[in-house]
Length: 385
Image 1 (spheres, rainbow, N blue to C red):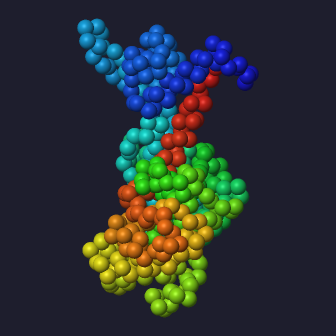
Image 2 (cartoon, rainbow, N blue to C red):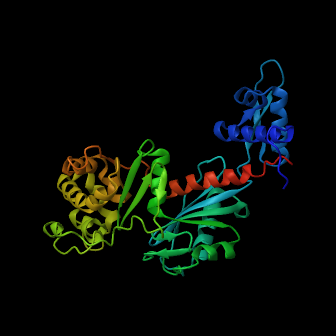
Image 3 (cartoon, rainbow, N blue to C red):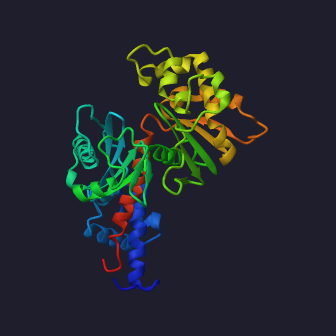
């Protein structure tokens, strides 16, 4: 493609069209007059921008708006079906998946059981796409990109996965390439806790934080490091994999048999604290945590031990307690952790519970996909168009 000089009519036309497209994404459907008012353009210019965007299939008429005495004005919106994606959360025994489009519309979440299914990366993602599209009544052929949250460390450069206990059938090397080659789409693999941190930054308690640490407490443990809105993954994607760290000597009085941090504050010890009976798992008993002061105290004590090395190294301004246990403990757990902190060492640290709901991984994957899909669509707005 030849270079178009800035300031020329051709360049200006493409610039105006991108402005119009972004306004339609930000505000939703607009009429010619509304677009003109928001963009500062005349009505004829706004009409031309809409016509060009419609000609390349980025927008379409979605309704009419009363224009007073004259004929109703046509409103235009971004086409949600031009390119779609699927956000996927890979769990130990199942998949949660949801369709994502450029308008960031809400779609039903599909839940797929994998208890008796043979697993491979491409088969798992294919099931996720088919189930999500069926739930949303969307044509799977429109899906061009997937974002998959996995309970593993993801090395993007090497296309490798580490700590893959919950991903049977997924090879340590080449999972992303296999998905892309066999399904014919773009795949983004990301650590699930990192995606949850992206959700927290977008709509949760981390929106204004300079440095935030998300401590995911569930069946396993994980940490996401958010430095000014950028997730720090480390050289090989392993930043935040703290569940395998050995417990300090001081933890022997809390959990004598603990050998790593997961055995101190992961799913099994927390389940025991909540009185789980034989056959009950963490999810079966977590509802008891908010109303059990003794259990909240015990979990808070363990959290403080687990995060001590993290706070010493990162010294964040915000610690977010997330994951199933962090969300269930809520403000009560955050308050108890705060009381147990060494305030001389961390005078400015705020501890808060996550506010991103029960699907933070999917929410983070959605945010990532919305940006990617919009970039792909905007790339179609060229001076030549």
